[in-house]
Structure formats: C-alpha cells, structure tokens
Image 1: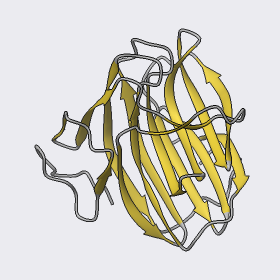
Image 2 (image 1 turned 180 degrees about the vertical axis):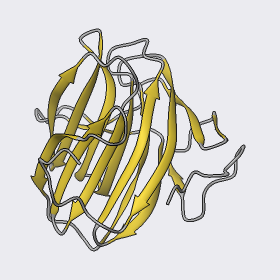
Image 3 (image 1 turned 180 degrees about the horizontal axis):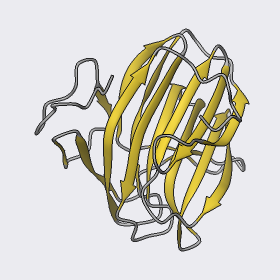
Image 4 (image 1 turned 135 degrees about the vertical axis):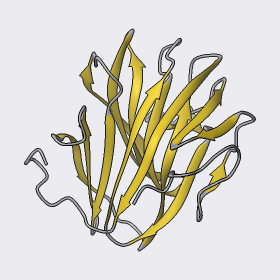
Length: 201
C-alpha cells in the first residue's frame, strides 16, 4: 500500500507526522519534496564528540513485522547530502539507509546506531536514483536497494532489540552543506517481512 498516493500540497498521509518539520516541503502527486536545512543530520559520533538528531524526519508508527519501500533522490551539492529511509526507536537506537554524496559520488550508505553510530559506505556510483527498502522480522533488520523494484540487493543485515512499535519514515539531510533538496517517490508498506535476505527478491 502506497501511503503517499494522492497526497498534495501540505496534506500529510494519515498517521504521519514530522520530527524536525522543515520550512519547505510539499507533496506533488505521489512524490514528497523536502528541503533539508544546513547541517541537518542524524548521527551519534563513535568518538562521543557529536550527537545530531536535527534532520527533517517524516514518519509513521508500525507495529510488528513490516517491509517499507521508497524511491529516493537528492540534488547533491555538498558531501553527505542525502535522502534516507530510517527506522527509529529512540535517540540512540535507530538505523537508516541513504542515497548520499560520498567522496564526490552518489553512493549507498547505511548507519546502524546502538548507542553510537556504525557508519558504512556500501556501494559507490549509481546511474539513477535507487529504491530503498527496510524490512523488520522480529528483532532482525535487513536493508536492500534496487534500480527496478524487482531485483533487490542486500546492503545490511543486523539485529537490534526493538520495542513492538517503532517509527519508520524518510529523512532529508545536509550534514556538511548549506541545505539539500530531496525527493521521495512513493512509500509502500507491507505487514510481511523479507525472509530471503540474500535471494535478490
């Protein structure tokens, strides 16, 4: 079920709300457009020097197992500008997968935070905006990407002790820049988890 379907203007889908609502955002058809402010980020530095939770995050609450998919795009002008799909339990327990400018290239980056953030660059250079997918199966989480929404490739598979109900949604970031325009096309939610983690489906 596409939760962004038939949204327009400043009308939020049923059950969605903002954390760090940005000044500029709107729906155009099934696409959400967001302007991330300068410095916007979610990150808990492993050195303990920084803890950021300032990025615009549009989320809904999901209970139990699920699979969520969106197509993410960003006008990347500065390092780490990105459009992300994120699950969030609290300030130090969350995970995101991002289409991000990294080392000057559009890349796929995942961050798993359990107290501190574990930051991982997975794949560099994509010719087109990817579909991003997060699936919960009990306390296991899988992250995948696709270019056609048919063939899926694993990015991350991990365990996190989670409450039954958590937040899931999209994030617009510009950690090191002056702001970034991002787009999310569709936001589909299914109650079924992905169980064939490495099967490419």
